[in-house]
Image (cartoon, rainbow over all chains, first blue to last red; front, top):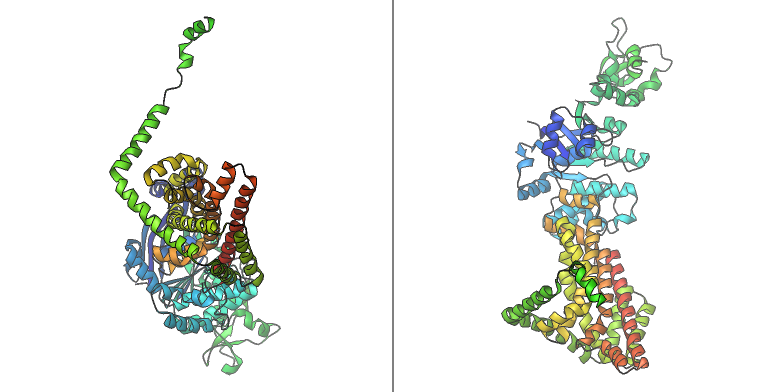
Amino acid sequence: MALIELRGLSTVFGPRPQAALERVRAGMGKAELLADTGHVLALLDIDLDIEAGEIFVIMGLSGSGKSTLVRHINRLIDPTEGTVRVEGQDVTALPIPGLIALRRRRLAMVFQRFGLHAHRRVIDNVAYALEIQGIDRARRHAEARRWIERVGLSGVENQLPSQLSGGMQQRVGLARALCAGTDIILMDEAFSALDPLIRSQLQAELLELQATLGKTVVFITHDLDEALRIGNRIAVLRDGALVHVGTPEDILLRPADAYVAEFVRDVNRARALKVHNALAPWPAELPVPEAAAAVDADAAIETVLPRLVGRRAPLAVRRGDEVVGRICTDTLRALLEPER
Amino acid sequence: MATAGVTALLPAAVDIFPDWRTPLRHATNAAIDTLIVRFGDQFEAFANSLLTILIAIERVLRGAPPWAILLATAVLAFAVSRRWRFALGATAGMWMVGALGQWDQSMQTLALVLVSVLVSILIGLPLGVWCARSDWVRRVVAPVLDLMQTIPSFVYLIPAAMLFGLGKVPAILATVVYAAPPLIRLTELGIRQVSREAIEAGRAFGATRWQLLTSVQIPLSLPSIMQGINQTTMMALAMVVIASMIGARGVGETVLLGLQRNDAGEGLVGGLVIVVLAIVLDRILQAGGRRLQTDPDA
């Protein structure tokens, strides 16, 4: 059983969502529905399993329904149809007290525009989840300080959010989510409002944190490079429907349809694909080289390209200390230049 | 004779208006009579409790020596602004009120304004919050607020005086009716303007509705609410002259006296004092509002 299970999730916004959904099922398109009835089809028949401990990225263009989708997991939005289960518990059927308890125990969230409370100091923003759970000031501040330090914000505890840069504000947002102590973190376009350098830093820090904390992260983004960098698995949403679920390699090498293929066309494939994607057996007639001279099978292709330039001899690939083959340059070319 | 003939020919022209005036008058008067007969005791009990609060505040303000009030003004003004010149200015204003011979009247007026603002906050804040939460409530309340602000005060002063007698209590009620609407509107506006993400963040971390209101919505709409309290205070001060007409003592009396005796100088003294009180209250409230917003511990 997956940690988070979405089953048959459909959501329509408007005064009569149920009736509108029936018209969609009868074959009406999203644009037609909006023009004819004023209803917005946000999600249609989403089935999704998110496993404990993975970073699961939900990707799509704006208006594809991705932010709506993530808000169903902690039920900030109620679906028109379908269920959301967290560890088997049906979130959509929970009474309010149960829902509040679930949000407190298991589901933290990070927001695109940070969602910080402008009237609270950084430390009180970070401690917010503990505060509303009635944990006393000394204990929640101690916990908050720990996370403020962890995200590299020591020294700004007593400042107001407005006194910080965007990147720092989102670190506060991240610390607030971590301080809640939940096993699941929902991140809605968490890094999208930041400039590229800061975004890249925060992505690296998220991966680093994740390596030690092992939380389940549901990460929403419209940025494919970001999705490929941090996602263990990626789901692609289009007009409210799932068009592809798979690993980053899957999505590049085996796109589910033309839309996904088009979507991934301009991405830096050398960064997203790994050496083992171009693995070929080591030629039997040649002596096997030392592992130290080989490249890691899980390294990004980008990192080994310099060693391939002008090289005649095959480049060995290792897994651990064992040489497992060589890089096949023909495969590599095909990987990096699909259908061109 | 000719006119009579024309009128006789056009009876319909005379009769296009039905008579609503008489039934409305009678129904209203009958309703108020019933209220007085059936709930007279309750109205009196309510009036007495308001009066108790007012008298307590009045006793403090009028009983304290003027220098103590001046000192309190200085301390309060400094506490909200942290600026000496500001504190000095506010104190000078209050001193001027005394120099114009209106000290006692000003204290009476201040007590009336304080109680009216207090009652306005007690009613206005929850009502504003409710309006922000429910479009339905807002649709009902908005026209009532328009009515409260536009209907001439004497219209509700008449029944108020009948229910509560002449004097301070109807004055407070009239002031509240006139002064509460901006607080209700600005509270609603402030709460509606709190960013969606700030609210979502509260909900996502498991805040209850009450926690959301007290930890996110009200604090973040405080600038707007403070503006509303400021407006309400100013409008309450503007009502003191009318309040004096139904027997509330205070600076309004001075203006009324000037009016009745055709004494322009006396009228000017009263008017000046009201302006000075308004300026002092306004500046202190605004500085207090700013302090609330910038001081994270407040």
